[in-house]
Image (cartoon, rainbow, N blue to C red; front, top):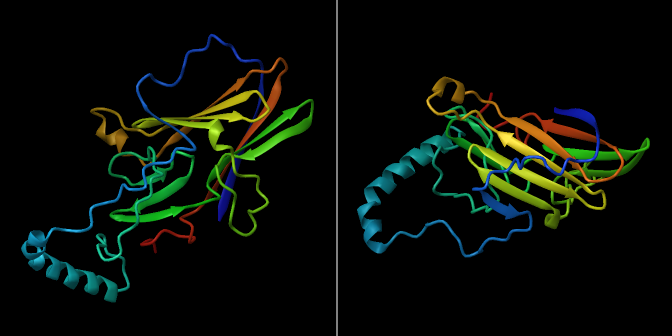
Length: 244
C-alpha cells in the first residue's frame, strides 16, 4: 500500500534579503560526495583476542542457532554482518521510539521501527517530487532522488536528479537539503526536524518528524510549484521484519 500527498503553491520572485535558514556550523556534503572506499568496520580480531573471547563466541553460537531454529532474526548478527554503506544522514524520529534513516541524497533507508531490528533497505517510492508550471503549462517535473527508478511500474518516473545540483547540511536533530532545479532558476530547501528537545523527555519520545519546504523563485515572473510526497507502508518487502 502506498500513499501520496500533493501541495501546490504560487511563488513570486524571491526576496534577496531573506534570512539564511541553514546554520553556520553543520556537516555539509554535495550529492556527488564519494567517501574513501578503504573505510571498513573492524571484523578481524587479534590472535590474543580470539582465545580471550572463545567462551563468549560459543555462547553466541548457541544463541544464534536457537533463534534461527525459531525462524527469527537475531538482534546481533555477527555471522552475516551488513556491509558498510556510506549513505546516511540525520534520521527521523524521537528518542527511544524507533527511527527511519535518511540518506544524505534524500533516500529513506535503515528502518528501525521494531526494537533492536534494522531493515537496511532503501525504498524507492518513498520520495518527494516537484512540478513547475508557468502560464498554465508544465515546464519541469522531477523525482528528487539522484538515481533512476529500478522497480517495475516506477521506471517511467523521472528520477536521477543531478548530483551537482543537490547539497545536504546536517546538525542533529535537524537537516537541510537544497535542490537547484536545472534550467528553472528555482531553489528548493527542505528542512527536516525530529522532536529532540532538551529536558523534555516525554515530547522527545514521540515517533514523528516534520518536513518544511521553502521555495526560492529567482525568475521575474511568478511560477506555480507543486510538491508531492509518496510513501509505501512498511519496508520494501511490504512489511517490516518482526511485525505480525
